[in-house]
Length: 455
Ligand SMILES: Cc1cc2nc3c(=O)[nH]c(=O)nc-3n(C[C@H](O)[C@H](O)[C@H](O)COP(=O)(O)OP(=O)(O)OC[C@H]3O[C@@H](n4cnc5c(N)ncnc54)[C@H](O)[C@@H]3O)c2cc1C
Image (cartoon, rainbow, N blue to C red):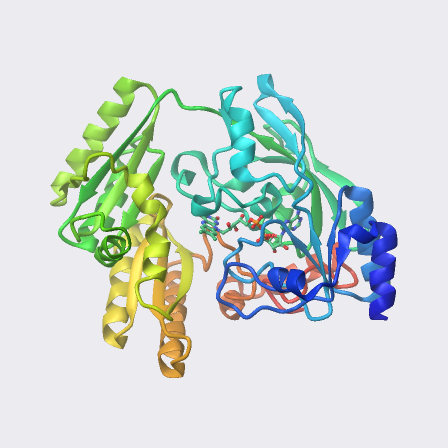
């Protein structure tokens, strides 16, 4: 059976686009989560929708699980394949198919990398805003759509889903179809485009994407503010939003994260909670918005954070996760990306730190807080069973508190395998409806099974 599948894959694609070499399978056995990998049966590279459809049909016939892969930078195990499954890698499908500069729209293949796309668009004065933070140099647009990725600029521009106009998909039975159209305003039937966005490869495989774009801002201004307490920094975020300031990004770094950054890079940062802000627009607007934000920060005891000459807030922020990861050799990060109504930010931040102190576990809080999202990065030793268990319990408690506040388990990374355990708690009976929807798209249950929820 195994040989048969490999042979037939080679016939559909070509022998040089199918492998079962252990070294290559080991790479695609994992994503960027700390979850254990699963070695698939084979790795294959498709070049177009017809090939994808033929591979899907083979999987239906042989009941073989199929996991689509972009760059494998997902953080919750959504890209980890199934035992005896096939990984279908679309990272070679990198073409820009059409660019409509007057409409601010582009049509791409799913494997194009976020930074590469924006480098192409720069010359036209356009960009695709929902930056996936530190993974922009690897994340593919197909992967971003499938996880509804968003990052630092979501405060001003929103997440990936808001930019997807059309999708070419292949369903779980191999049917090729186009969803959506290029109209930006629409009120025509069920929004299947939005359903596929964020579905983590469980409903369909995306072979083409039409995106809405934004004009590159005339100017940018970055500033940084420090606070005595995490609580006041968090309160300032909610106030800045309440004043309706036009702000592109608000990043929060707690005291422990600033310490970790100093340990990694010797930045000489004051080890205090901080907010990094970015504004987009013409010069005068940038200045007046920053002044207003500064006065709000001051009301909450904040003041400008001095950075050494040449240091820029965003470069520092870029290293935050690495800094936490390298803080204790042999330790690993349990992370989450809970999102909630913005007014709850101070309580959530305080709760994360209380839990860390109570359990003697190092909890860092940081993230794109302007939309009411926080990353609690919990540092623990995976070889110490007790510590690892307590760290996971802390993560679950943070998620439970978020759901209590009418928030969500994931604001940007998705559910994958990592956060499946509390999915029912967030969605209740709606999970059954999701199961029925999956059956319609994927009657044989071959598309990335076991992700988001169990059938
Ligand atoms: C350092 C770092 C920083 C990060 N920062 C952010 C951040 O700020 N914001 C954020 O949102 N994420 C962030 N991420 C997570 C990750 O980069 C994003 O989820 C990204 O969108 C994944 O893209 P990818 O190409 O790697 O997808 P993959 O990991 O390859 O796939 C992700 C999921 O999408 C499915 N998939 C991929 N391509 C397709 C397709 N064509 N059709 C159907 N399904 C498909 C896969 O099966 C899987 O379920 C970060 C990751 C790292 C490592």
